[in-house]
Length: 249
Image (cartoon, rainbow, N blue to C red):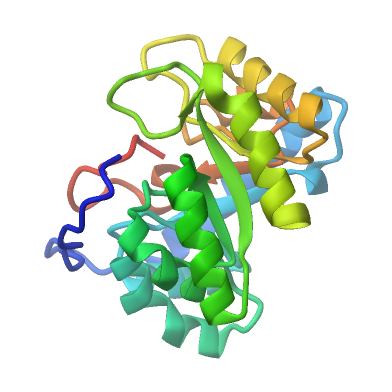
C-alpha cells in the first residue's frame, strides 16, 4: 500500500430503493443464528464470536436499521466515508463500535485514530509510526489488529507472512495491550481453512486473543478455526451499490 497522499473519494451511493428495515433485521437474525450454530459445532460459546456488520458503501439509513435491530459493531473501508456517516450515528447510539478494515494510508492515520474504535489493518512500520504519532496528538489509541497477508498475494494489503512474527513482536512492544490480535483475508479461490489455521497459529505464538477472519462466504469455517470476529456485509445489507475495493465481505 503506497504511503503517497491521494484523494479519498466521497461516498458514491448509487440510486435505488431505500434500505428495507425488515429485511436487514431478518438478515441479521439469520446470520446470528448461523454464527451460533457454527460456534456450537466447534465446541465454542456463540457469545465468543462477535459479528462485525460491514456497511461500506451502504447509506447511513441501512446502519440505522441495523442499529434498531440491536447490531452495535460495524466496519467501514474508507476513513472519509466513516467520517461522513458515523459521528451522528454515534451521538444517537453511544455504545456503537466502529472498525476500520480498509488499507490505511499514513496521511489518514490521525483521522482513523480520531474516528475508530478498532483499526484492523496495521500492516507496516510506517503506518505504526503514523498511528503512534496520531495517538499522541489525539490522546486516544484505538484497539489495533495486525493484518497479515496470509496468502502472500501481491494485490492485497497486509504484512507478508515471512515478516509477520517480527512485526507483531515490534507492535506488541510499542502499543502494549492495544495490539489485541490479527486480521486476514484468505485467497478468494482457495479453501480458506488452511489460511485461517495459519493465522490462528500466528496469534497463538504471540498470545493474542483476537482473530478477525471470515466473511459472508466463509465465516463458518473461520469460526471452526477460532475466529473471534467475523466481518459480514452482503449477507446483512445485500449487494453493494458499487464494487468494494478490498475483497467481498
